[in-house]
Length: 193
Image 1 (tube, rainbow, N blue to C red):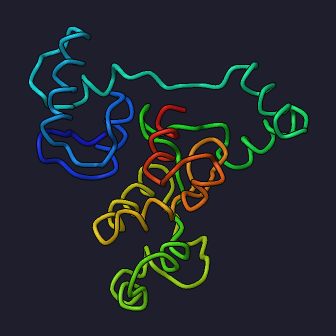
Image 2 (image 1 turned 180 degrees about the vertical axis):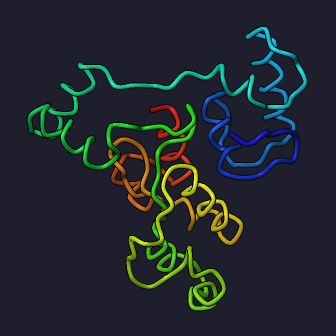
């Protein structure tokens, strides 16, 4: 994970804010700094407001329980085995990368659909913005976060809408179908499991 501190920006800040239970905007300001310092004090860490390896390592990876699977199967009207099969196919059963980041695939063809002046970005950033789906563009693991962060610098909302995330690889643009009021809330929920 990246080291974060006051004035850091980006998706990792959003993950940190989610885990701290504070407003998620991807900007490490004074409120995030205060929350980090409180968290560090409560976990016996050096209280410096810097989120490095030691602070990141104190966050646990959430996981689904058998009851979670049963509730989902009941809600969807299917069997538990089907839900587990989808999880295996979509994320190989790995919902998180580096303990805090949800597993993602960045979809450049979806980014093309959401970003203003997509034609321009397609010429300049063909690895993250293109008209048609192209599996060859995937980098996997943390490489997908490199692509997401590049898109974030262009258009934060379009970038978050363009990544499928978590165990079931739900695309960010589907935030309202997941009961979220915006894509930030969906990412925050994904960070919590």
